Image 1: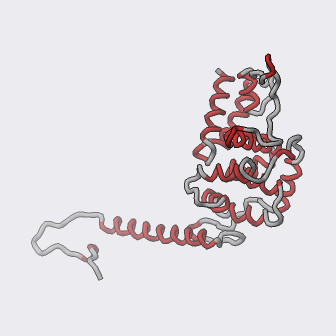
Image 2 (image 1 turned 180 degrees about the vertical axis):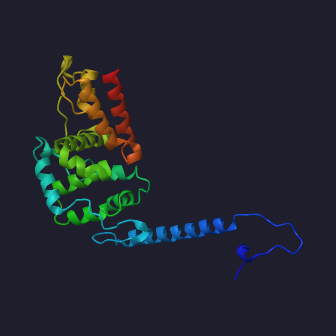
Length: 262
């Protein structure tokens, strides 16, 4: 049965011992219950039972909807297709959307996880919801949505709904970076960036650093301080490493902001 200090009595004639045994044992029992609840929650996540149903394990609702549906994906697709270079996005490797997702996976806490599993780890049920919404034939829209979730994590629905053209611009920029790092450093067909003007001798002209910083923040050349700060705060929320963002992109944003404000 084991020793229970609550039933122990000091020998006759000995000095009484003052302790808070009952409180310690109550705290221990509470911790055990919490551990059991967390284990049940982890098991539900492993079995994929969090999608489409409510579960009260550990006081967490596993059936919470994130608003990612097939209809919503279609609306995102229509919005992204308005970008003038939408057709330039490629799906396959080595410099397409699939490669971009693979690159992001290497930055995750556990690179062995799939995109859906990583999303479920960050926000329970989100990955399963996305997987269901993307069922069907593979297309540029579906892969672009997956790549957006790989970049922005649980904030992807907000970005796709509010700034679909900027999402496409970011995907194009990331694919362009992959092309530059590919063997030979050649640009993949259809992924050249705009704003490459000819300088003296036929080479590309060097863009003004301030204009580069404004373009990185998605701002017009005449943007004021207030607009710069708003854009910076919005982008930092998506790229901050603590929220699953890209460290390199975060440092670029920070440097651009300091250049413009300083």
